[in-house]
Length: 447
Ligand SMILES: *[C@@H]1O[C@H](CO)[C@@H](O)[C@H](O)[C@H]1NC(C)=O
Ligand SMILES: *[C@@H]1O[C@H](CO)[C@@H](O)[C@H](O)[C@H]1NC(C)=O
Ligand SMILES: *[C@@H]1O[C@H](CO)[C@@H](O)[C@H](O)[C@H]1NC(C)=O
Ligand SMILES: *[C@@H]1O[C@H](CO)[C@@H](O)[C@H](O)[C@H]1NC(C)=O
Ligand SMILES: *[C@@H]1O[C@H](CO)[C@@H](O)[C@H](O)[C@H]1NC(C)=O
Ligand SMILES: *[C@@H]1O[C@H](CO)[C@@H](O)[C@H](O)[C@H]1NC(C)=O
Ligand SMILES: *[C@@H]1O[C@H](CO)[C@@H](O)[C@H](O)[C@H]1NC(C)=O
Ligand SMILES: *[C@@H]1O[C@H](CO)[C@@H](O)[C@H](O)[C@H]1NC(C)=O
Image 1 (spheres, protein in one colour):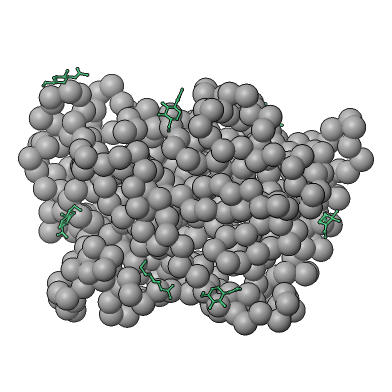
Image 2: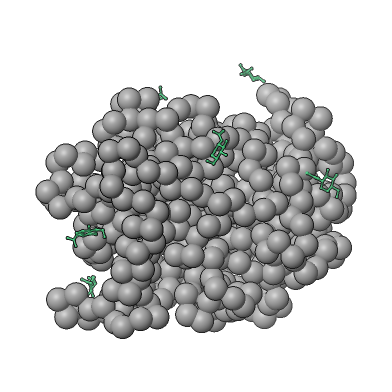
């Protein structure tokens, strides 16, 4: 099981939300391609595959969707799905991350990887094109480097023939660069599910490159809950990731779609409109300070100082945790009831998800799963950067749908098949809610 403070400190605090970081692509002396090459390559791929451009229909296949069974890693820490890369295909499990736009995979040069981690062998793929250049990327507690390549990539039964991805170098895998357990279990990399505008490799993300292969420009998640289950194994069934549409067996009632802020889509964003705690409305700052990014690869919720303070002030017996700035604790016996709204319905978070375990062995105070990330950096007004990071604490509680066109995010009640109490659907009582995850570090990798 992961340690919450260690994880979250590594994740949130070194990361600066204040200003976009410009990511340089450095050139190797042996290489003959510079940044303009990638810009033009990305343009070429965008023209070829773009969802706004002319349709791409390989082999005349009909557009479709696929539901992929995922893996729940370490009690809701990450959710993994299988991909294959290369010819012949090499198979891996990758973290589904809605705040990144690139595909990353650890390759065989990673000497510091756990010997159980499957590694991509570029030399064994007959179809790979390696650009032989490094992407230098500000990442969690420092920069990391990787080699950009193109190869055949498949997920579900969808294939992109020449997908750009990043092979992680050993430096990236160094323990001091990654939160504990980041590539734990069978995870070999990350599949980014945000938009091309924030691609570090300046390429079209896999899901966007699928273009008209997809029946609908949508991705949907049902995420399982193993938080607090002491019998949970390192890897458990993670739920269902649907690419190209939704899976109607997993939700009941309508999907309530909420439009994203206008402008070129970057991350999956909505504006927080209301929060209740223990049935009481909590005051939050509106406008830019309410901008929220949805992150399937973060197990918690992060927010600005004032809003997070107000949330915990509404829970009797709560206190700031002295040794862990930004964290709050509350009496473990308290059922913390929180709902979030993003302009529509109020979606409740199961109290199990609000409890991140005792602050020390045997303590009667438990960590709360909503953390103050304003201590690291408060988003300056008008910066366009999100103040809230809405991770799996919320996303486990809803069926979530990420729709590219029109850019919007939808929520629906989970069906009983998906662990929700679908039969109790009613307009007044919304049972269970929430869903996704991710690592929020990419939030600042704006090009
Ligand atoms: C894949 O893309 C790269 C970079 O644009 C290019 O050099 C290579 O020829 C392409 N390969 C195929 C098979 O299209
Ligand atoms: C929807 O999800 C269920 C549960 O995982 C699965 O059995 C079913 O095959 C999926 N439906 C489609 C059309 O993929
Ligand atoms: C990361 O890269 C940036 C840009 O190249 C550089 O300014 C910065 O010093 C690097 N940081 C570290 C910790 O190496
Ligand atoms: C993917 O599988 C589904 C269900 O088996 C099928 O309907 C669809 O045509 C397939 N899509 C592609 C692109 O092969
Ligand atoms: C390597 O991974 C296995 C399986 O996830 C785990 O049990 C083991 O502790 C890991 N080893 C190290 C050194 O992290
Ligand atoms: C909250 O989650 C727990 C654990 O998954 C589950 O047993 C319980 O039924 C859920 N509560 C509600 C109100 O759905
Ligand atoms: C935690 O406390 C239990 C008893 O309360 C004890 O058996 C266990 O060894 C303790 N674990 C650690 C890591 O101190
Ligand atoms: C963010 O704002 C809070 C007060 O709302 C302040 O305590 C904190 O120091 C600020 N963080 C930074 C990095 O300036």
